[in-house]
Image (cartoon, rainbow, N blue to C red; front, top):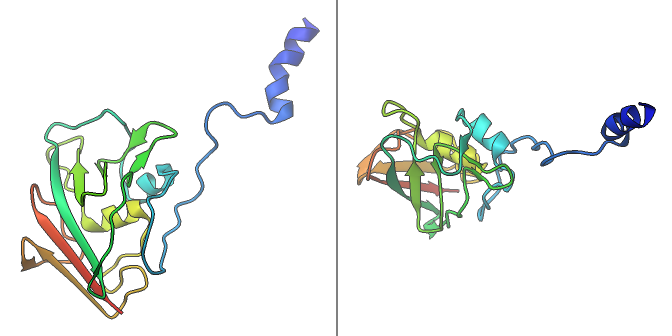
Length: 166
C-alpha cells in the first residue's frame, strides 16, 4: 500500500507536468513590423475575448475577409497561424491558415461579428484608433474602398485595408 501511495505522490513531489506547459500572458507588441504569429495562442485568444474552439471547428456560416496592412506604404506580411494554438489543438473564431492575407471567420453563431481590433489582439500587435505597432501618426481603415472605423467588424467576403504612418 505504501508503494501505491508513493507512486501517486510522485508527480506532485517531483513537479512533473502532464500535457503542455501553461501559456504565458498575452504580450501586445508596440514595435515595428514584422510581427510573427504568437506561438502559444491561448492567452491571445482569451485576451481578444474569443472562446477556445477545437482546430476542426468551422462554425455555422464560415467566411473569409481579405486584409491588407501597410506601414509607411510598405506591405506588412500577415503570418499563418494567428489565432491558432497547435500545442493545445485550439483556435479562435478568427484565424489565418497561410500568408495569403485571408482571415477565416468561423464563429459559433451567425450573430457573432468579430472586429479588426480583436484580430490585432490575436496577433499580439498594438492597434487602436491612433496606432498600429509603433506607427502612430496616421491610421486609416478602408472597408471595400470606403472609410471605416478603426475597430470595424470583419464583414463577409470584404477587403479591409489598414494603412499606418509614423
